[in-house]
Length: 246
Image (cartoon, rainbow, N blue to C red; front, side):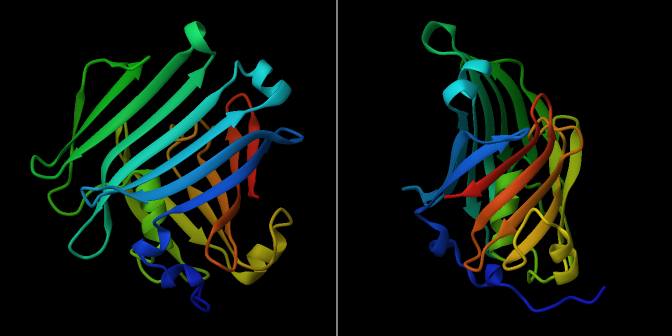
């Protein structure tokens, strides 16, 4: 399928993203605004970058979900070719408050000298036995958020309608891939959940990233190249989870 005109996503630089803070209203099942989320991108003193995403339920939804809070942290560095490389990736699911709080987490630490990735699971800040996963001799793997920012920057190639991108990633079971399909104008117009302006992408990730049945995601970028709306399909216990930027 021939590609169409390139999008504003390819015109961004890393420095354009530094300081970005996006706030979202999140809903699931048939309800809107059951949770609030925000995503930030910052530069650290050592020259690395950090992406952080948090979503937490509110109101009656907070009571029914035990004040569930879920956050993701991805630390990365800029490689010689300008591609962002994963350094640390963490996911936390937090339920309860004060003495009844439970924090379940996963962590991946990328070592490019040893060509290996250390994976561990934790609870309430204490991590168990570390499992080491091999890294390919050339290149590497990308966690979902480092891959996301690389895609926005056009580091995997010019972002064009009708194109498909396969990005090497991994899960606790080993190598996997992130697949991004940029929908054509007709495909986007046929999807009634999102505007016909901007750019709509269909993404496939490993099911463990968002605890979903199939790993399917839709992300809509507005005219400024910002991820302004999205749907994570079939999240366990919640159904489709949808968010929109404030």
